[in-house]
Length: 229
Image (cartoon, rainbow, N blue to C red; front, side):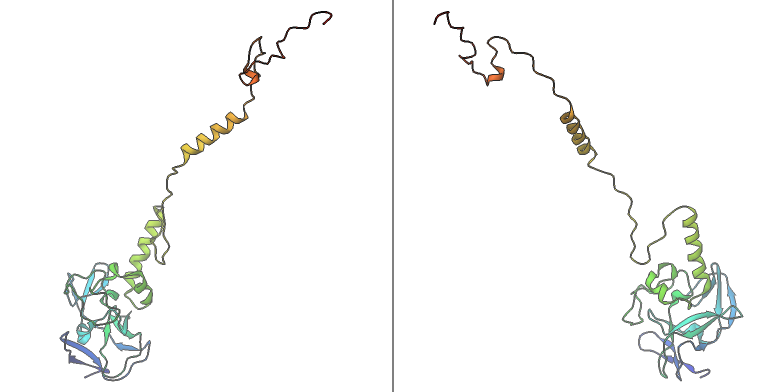
């Protein structure tokens, strides 16, 4: 036992690190020390850069993952990861952190997460697959290179003129093509026809019945009376 924590057995996850005293929010729980550099990623590797992996010494490699951890990460002066309390930790409580706080991608764990948290994602994921909501929850408590990757990606999208990715339910929809153009054209044509001046009808000839509803008026064509009648 050292520094307020110790190694214990767990029922479902093998070994784990447990607090032997309480830690307040923001208090350093474990101080990281780099044991050696690694040339590849593996289950106990800590990613401290986009292409840099190290192995921490001491019990840090025994700290288990949780999808709702009580610790986050601070980069110390030696370039190692300190574990800092993001929640109140009491004596006897297991010390946990989210592996997505340090590794961009996760490829070395079982298909289903065993953390047992109500917020469990069912799968241990790296930072690149972490939901935006959780990234916001972990603000200031992750390896700095992870947020640098996100910032670089956002800058590249802006330079290419692409809309930013949606983070708070804001949706970007392309403009839909209009389907009523033909209908508008027909309406405009009808309007122009209605405004066209009407041509006058030709004069009626004898016996032409067009203006009389198709019937001949006897009064209109009766010969004049004879003189003296």
